[in-house]
Image (cartoon, rainbow, N blue to C red; front, side, top):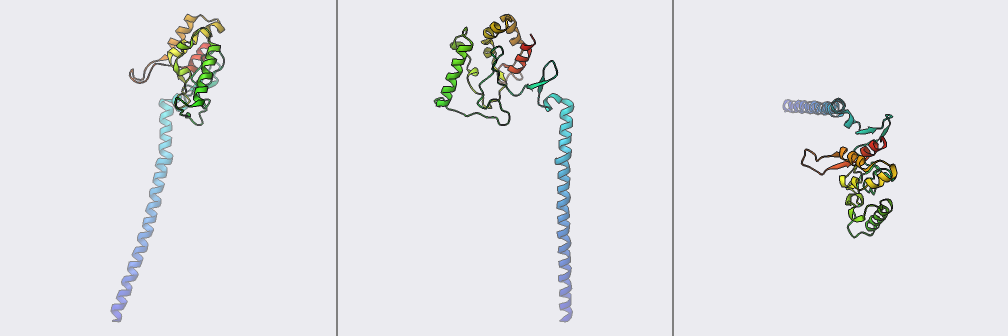
Length: 210
């Protein structure tokens, strides 16, 4: 009986030691796997992505920044700006004042009082700044907010209706301004998607060089 009991005790001790070793091995495996993923996902992948982006598309990787003739950064071609100088082309209405820290709009309905007031103010300002162009020719994108509030583009029509004002204020012939708008009109993506558009910042940078 003692022998059996002793054998039973020995077996229990062996099983206990075996379980202890398995637990330690499991913990070590978890630590090792975590370290591998940290190295791959936290170090190797970001470094590889950055290297590829900086090699093949450095401008986009750095924010698609635009520089003037003096080499100064004046903005990004991906984010619109608010232009109030009547001698420059104006972009779309932005409910967030083109603050890239948080994109979005108020998502007002067509009967919302604030939106109606904002639209009315925009139309009245248009009448003041553009007496030669009737409101009936005013493109909707000049008095409406984009979904993000950061849209850097306007339609070619929205640029064209501003030409009389800019021509009167700058003395640049309307024909030259029309050619400038045509030069900076971007086509549909892949020739199929989206609409023709004009980047307002690029257009104004070219205008200031005239």
